[in-house]
Image (cartoon, rainbow, N blue to C red; front, side, top):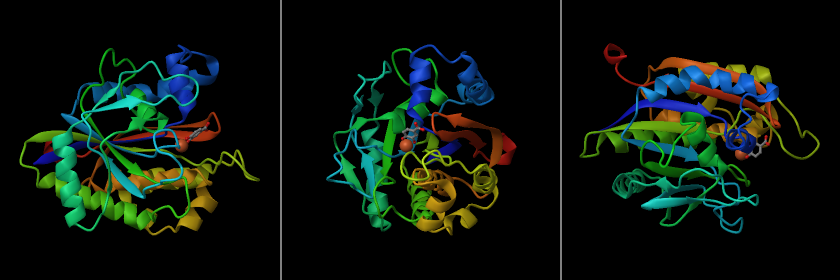
Length: 285
Ligand code: DHB
Ligand code: FE
């Protein structure tokens, strides 16, 4: 079987990647955010998985806005880093795991989740910034192959939180039926509260974020019951990215152990958080 050993929830704000690429992580306005990551990065360095699944959204960089799949999965050998208009980030391309991608695809379709298949895909900050949060100095390669799992959070109608949680549970079942023994790290990306445009641009809701950070561990079903409209009202029009954390959570066990959490406002225009959970059996923690 493929066993999820940890889940990492993290914001994907592009300027976090830009601060790392530009060597500004010790600047006064960034230092606290990056200091907050350190305990999680240290723990993750000691717990490398064989493969990672990154639940993320493209921001019209790898996929044209004329075609917006609700859910998609990459099945490629390799994913190039997208040029988002400022030149591509100086980070490695992403190596895929086509065999596990195809296994997930087949099982998810059989389980009622009709994913769009990406045999080619350029990956944007939605995927590369979480990889940088996990691995600040990848050198020539990221620590393991990566499977991109895409979610539409940018165009109405986004999938419901309940559907995302159910997709995560289906991913958990699909992983359990894999015929190879591999360990998996799963990343739920995006959030926390933020709104980038419109009358509420700059909107942040720390009370909602604190509730979400607690309930993602202890009561994900409560979060899965939130409607699209409630999520946008409470977390902002881009804060709805948080539904991707529920896919991560659905693929994990009922009881998980929080390893580390950090919350920082603002990273660019966004409430940025990291929450790391150990998904192994309690005796192994
Ligand atoms: C910002 C946040 C995002 O989630 C994003 O995709 C782009 C920009 C920001 O806060 O700048
Ligand atoms: Fe985003």
